[in-house]
Amino acid sequence: MDLPKPQSTPRFTLGKQSSLKPNREDLLPEEEEELIDPRVRLMYLANEGDVEGIKELLDSGTNVNFSDIDGRTALHVATCQGFTDVVQLLLDRGAEVDTKDRWGSTPLADAIYYKNHNVIKLLEEHGAKPPVAPMHVQNTREIPEYEIDPRELDFSNSVDITKGTFRIALWRGIQVAVKTLGEELFTDEDKVTAFRDELALLQKIRHPNVVQFLGAVTQSSPMMIVTEYLPKGDLFAYLKEKGALKPRVAVKFALDIARGMNYLHEHKPEAIIHRDLEPSNILRDDSGHLKVADFGVSKLLKVAKTVREDSPCQDTSWRYVAPEVYKNEEYDTKVDVFSFALILQEMIEGCPPFSTRPDIEVPKAYAANERPPFRAPAKRYLYGLKELIEECWSEEPFRRPTFREIIMRLDDINNRIAQKSRWKVGPLKCLRTFEAMLKSDRLNPRSHSSRSISR
Image: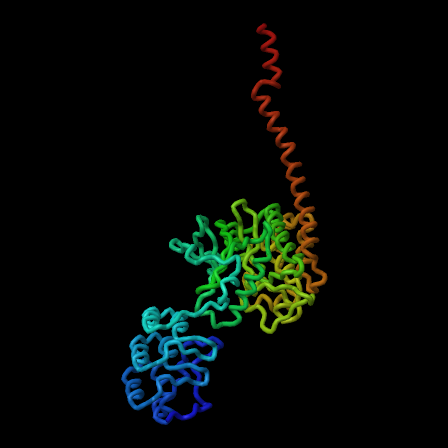
C-alpha cells in the first residue's frame, strides 16, 4: 500500500522550467538515506545513476512512477542526467514514458533540453511522443495562411547568424533567416508568449526599413519564424569593423533607422514599441540600407498610452535600455528614441556607450542621469547632431522628439552636408578641367603663336 506523499518531499528543480539537473546540495548525507521514504530515495539514486540500488528498491515494491510535489519522477531525473542504463531499467520496470511534471515537461523534453541523444533515442523507441507545438490546431481550416511546410526549409548548409537565434536556410530557391523556438522551451510560458507576440507583430508590418516577414512554422515542432535574409549582417558587426563613421554615412544610416521606427510608432490602430533597439537588431541589405529587425520583446501600445511590466529587460541588451524601463516605470514609444540616440552617437564616436563599463552597470548610469561622453571632434557633429542626440536621450521622456520630428531634422542635416560636398567638389572640378585644357594645348598661348608663325 502506497503511503501518502509527504509535503516535505524535496524538489529536484531550482527554477520554473522542470528540465534542470538536481543540485548536489539537494542530496542527503549517507547516514540519513535509510531514514527517508524509499520512493524519495529512488529519486536520489536515479540522480546518482545507482542501477543496483534502484533495482533493490524496485524489487522491494517501491513505486517506479512515484512523483514528488512538482510531479517529477525518477525517469525525469535520470533523463536530465543522461543515465541511459538507469532510463532503460526504469522503462523495463514499467515507468510511464510520457508522464508530465507540474510544468508540462516530459522526460523526452528534458532529454532534448540537455541534448542527451542516447536517452532521446531510447525514449522514442519506447513510444515517447515529441512535444506538441503550443500553437497547433485540430481543425485544418484554422491553420494560418502564413504557415510554411517545414519540409520546404533546407538547413543542409545552415549557419548561425546575428545573435545566434537565427539560422540561414534555403526556401523555395532563396536564402531566408529562420528563428527557432526549441522544443525544450515549450514548457516556458514566457518564451512561448513572446514567440506568439512577435509573430502577431510581424504579420502587421510592411516597410522598406523593417525586415520582411515571409511566414512561420506553427503546426509542428520546432516552431519557426521565417524572414528575409540580409547577407551583409548587422550594424553591430559593421561598426566593429569600421569604427567611427563619416558624418554623412552616420546620418544616412540614422535616417534609415528613424524611418523604420517612425513606421512602427505610427502604426494603426496600435503603435508598436520595439524596446530592444540596438546595433545587433539592425540589419544591412544589399544596397547598404538599414532595416530594423527582431521583435522578440516588442509591445503593442493599445488603449493605454504607456506600458509597464513586472519583469522588464529579460531578453534586452542593458547597454541600450532607457532608464524608465530599467527602473520598472511606465514607458511609451520614447524608450526607442532613447536607444536611437545611443546608436547615433555610437556611429559617430566609433565605440558603444560606456564601452569600458560592464553591461549590467550601464543602465544604472542612465538612471543617475549620466550619458556617454562626446569625445569625437566637434566637426563630426555637424549642423546640430549633438543637440539632437542630447534631446533624444533626455531624462524626461516627454522632452524627447518623435521619430517624425527626428526625420525632419536629419533630412535638413543631410541636405546641408550634401550642399557642402557639392560646394567642395565644384571648384575642384573646374580646376581639374582647366588643367586638362592646358595639357591639351587649348589654352597654351605659346602653342597658338607657334602655329601662326608656321603658317
